[in-house]
Each structure stands twice: as structure tokens, then as C-alpha cells.
Amino acid sequence: MLSKTEIIQRWYEEIWVKGNWGMIDQIYRPAPESESLIPGGLIDTLEARELVTIFNNLITDQKVRIVHCVADGEWVSALVEMYGFKAGTDKPINMRWLTMVRLDKEIIVESYPAVDFVSLFEQLGQLPPNSFELLLSGTVLK
Image (cartoon, rainbow, N blue to C red; front, side, top):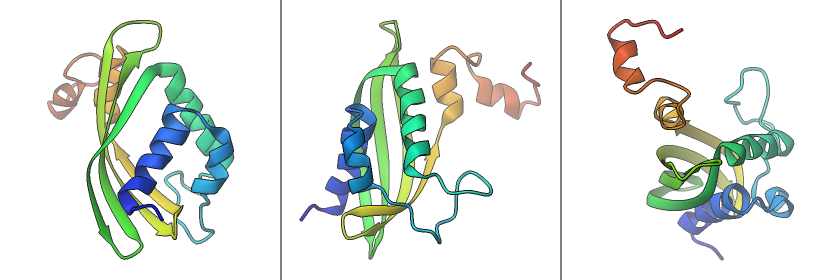
């Protein structure tokens, strides 16, 4: 039986890094009572595949590490780091996020990631440097 940290690591390693779609239904089955990050609907396994595909088109050669993991019953919270490169370049991309998941044995049935997308899109060159600070100062990015 995998530890809760190993379950989270397995999710990111098998699905996000390796793109092992055959594993997704074995690792992730959103429960019907789950709240969605997208208003009005659950992120199902098909949408999860699409999200991972989008990330893999933006970031290549990914490495994922679970920095910290805390469990309380069926709930697990983890600080996750991902390192990789902007697709088609040698520009490094480093990102961190927090995720909270609910497990049913070794299956993720709820997932609530909190990702610093501003920093990610700055690193990808899609937002100007220091966007967060600019937005805090009242600057409108157009």
C-alpha cells in the first residue's frame, strides 16, 4: 500500500510528467459530490487529460517533487514543485503550488490545487515581469 505522499507523487509523475493516460482512471475518479474549480461542473478525467496536455505543450522535461505533505484522515495537503523548460527553448521554468486532495484508499476523489499562474505566465513570457506587483499598484495590463 502506498503512503499518501506516494499517492500524490504518483499522480504527478505518471499523469503530468509521463503522460501515462492509461493510469488516469486508476488514480483519479472525481466523486459526484465534489466541488469543482470550474463553476458548474466537475473536472472529469477527459478534462484532466486536456489540462495536462496544455501544460505539456507549454513546459517540457518536467520534474516534480513533493516538498511537504500533511495528512489528516482522508485529506492530504502537499506543497509541490515542478521544474522544466519553456517548450522549444532552454529557458527554465520553476513553479510551486499547494494542493489539497481527498483520497478513497489510493484514489484521488477530490482535488483543489492552488497554482501561482501569474508567476508561471511571467516565466513563459506571456505576462510582463513583476506582474503581481504591477497589479497590486493598480496597473491595468492590456
